[in-house]
Length: 131
Image (cartoon, rainbow, N blue to C red; front, side, top):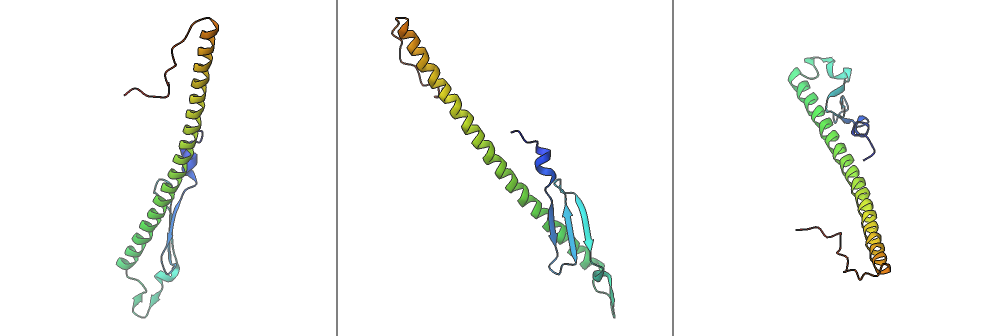
């Protein structure tokens, strides 16, 4: 294919946000965490201490980062499917062109042999692959 794989992936990111919108994560195409946003509301203290204890906060961050990773995987899969389809189309076009060229070559060869006074045997189908 004509497009560099790095160029295809450089714009991909995986992103996710917690249901309450207070935690957001963004991963790059390699799955590395690029940005983690925590709304200050998460750390505000209520009457009985922080709104979230550290374990709950860590669990929420982990869940959002994992969701961002799932988003990235889905986008990579879609991109790979698109690229595979494009490659398949290019390969089919090239195969058709080669088949037409082989057919033309066989026809021209038979005609040339007849013109030279030879009775050529039928040309084999060059598109068939030996078993």
